[in-house]
Image (cartoon, rainbow, N blue to C red; front, side):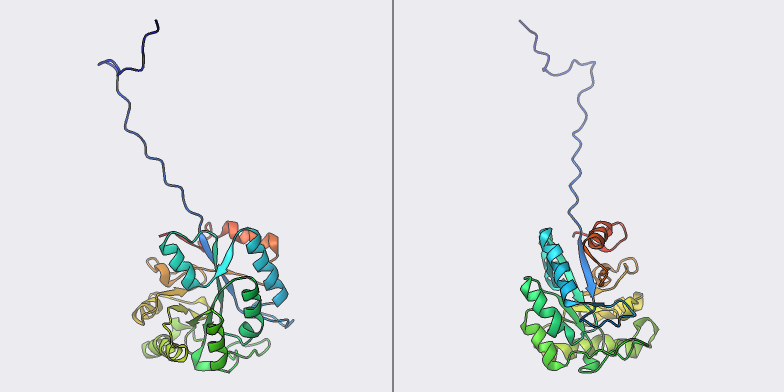
Amino acid sequence: MVADISAAPRADEPGPGPAVEARPKRRAAAWVAMYHSVSDCPDDPFDVTVTPARLDRQLAWLAARGLRGVSVRELLAARARGAERGLVGLTFDDGYTDFVTEAVPVLRRRGCTATVFVLPGLLGGANTWESGGPRKPLLDVDGIRGAAAAGMEIASHGLTHLDLTGVPDDVLHTEVTESRHRLAALTGGDIEGFCYPYGYLDERATAAVRRAGYRYACAIAPGPAGSGDFALPRIHIGQADTSLRLELKRRLARRYGRALESV
């Protein structure tokens, strides 16, 4: 008969060490895309315009990979539940009129939502902060309400597109707080998101956004240490971003600090 060698070890033999817990698998990092204008305008010196056809192909690229574009509000709510897998945040800065006329039809056809960052101090105006390039009209009251009615998130880009790191305290307060109040009155809903004009921010700006009652704020690059959801990084998407470039940006998002970490 064969001896049973699976019994407990002899007294002079060390027992097995403590079990090593398996490292939990890291969830796929969500990321946020940064768009601006959607039109067929060929004059684009600042690389802020994509054509409706290009936007449609980019959203199709997401869908082919099991991904769906959503507003930042929806993305963060899903992340809080651990359910952000398969979602990509879509944002459109500056609140151009073409968001409603050109982007929204494409978004709805593809089953997507998005966040549009608007400027309530320049309603129905134009992008006068740009030193060159074409003048593009901005959303007015009816346009903003129309975007909200289409299921898009309305969020603030400040009142007048100022670099918040270079303004006095009273101007900073007005740009951040007053813009939220005006948009809430205009839409009849809570305004959860803010976006720093030009992507410029510092600790003073993030503190002002927190005090104003926002839930999150979008930047471009990661913000100061401890900024958390008040300096969400984003990935710029432009007309040149075909499938290959989109795949590279997606894969490099976490490496270059442009992904949202799980909570």
